[in-house]
Amino acid sequence: MADLLDDLRARGLVHDHTEERALREMLGSGPVTLYLGIDPSADSLHVGHLVGVLALRRFQEAGHRPLALVGGATGMIGDPSGRSDERNLLDAATLASNAAAIAGQLEGLVDFGGDGGARLVNNYDWTESVTLIDFLRDVGKHATVNQMVAKDSVRSRMDGEHGISFTEFSYMLLQAFDYWWLHEHHGCRLQLGGSDQWGNITAGIDLIRRRGGTTVHGLTWPLMTRADGQKFGKTAEGTVWLHAKRTLPFELHQYFLNTDDGDLERLLLQLTLLPVAEVHEIVTAHELAPQERQAQRVLADEVCTLVHGQAATEQARLAADVLFGDGELSTERLEAVRGIVPETTTDGSAVGSDEPVVDALVLAGVCTSRSDARRAITGGGIRVNGRRVGSPSEPVDLVGGRYALLQRGRRQRHLLIVH
Image (cartoon, rainbow, N blue to C red):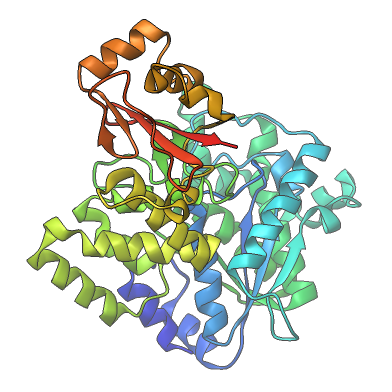
């Protein structure tokens, strides 16, 4: 089990940690209960959460016992770490709904089955009944303001334009209380998190030592950014989510297919369960023929399968082949793009007129008017089922007697379904 630490280091997943010899001895002595906290600020995890969730899984597969904490209580406060302004406070009903949605996603990524399975916990369950007096007496008296102000997450906010509210200032103590409670009730001895959580983690370590004289541990990994310095998991359109209704499996697959070569090795190491040696082989082969983008394909397939399953990955690959390839279309292939591109259902009259392509383009909203459609066709910018249309009077050939994929330019696509 101690080899796990070497594996994490080889993957670039070690940033800050408590004393290494003691940490190794603990991990090598038998199963260790550990936890990772996630605040339900949205109704879905995003790709930035994958590092931590897969870290739980790596520990579990090495024989340890993970606790996945959904922060129903801390989510009401908002963690100031890594932020320049205060979070919007969510109401209890929204947080409960978000927590339930996130719990479902976690259960698809970490094994919660059986006696040795992971456990899902919500800090609202043990925080709700704690009075202010109890909290100040049992937690607050063990932390000094000097220590709290010295933490990077607090100091950076105090030096910033907006400062930090007392509400967010107290977040560190709430997270410390979580660690103490999990240690007391579950025997938890290790907390994981991103490097921006180190101050909160050490607060919990200090609280446990001061209240019980026990030594526990913490481990963080570097925060992820892309090769261009931008925040990982963000695009021009917004966050890349793990919930299929927020970010389609196809879009998730495409996000990783477009990974910069400079990010490939790190993402393969940290966002997949592939062995380190196999990742190095994949990257070495990629460097010999980068134009084939094989490493990107492996990364996209592995992540999409972890999150959504093999069937979703196969559909994403098939849909990409339909939208960006030049192979012959079939009913099965066009059905793969349903839900990925806009679609319009109509009867056969829309494609039976004197100018069937024009009518189809206007009906689908691909063109704004019949004259706009004619200009687009004359300019060579319209394709139907991959074939360039040369005249408004050309028939619309339906694949399987039902489907027509309309395309304007390189990006605009629409599926016409005739019933």
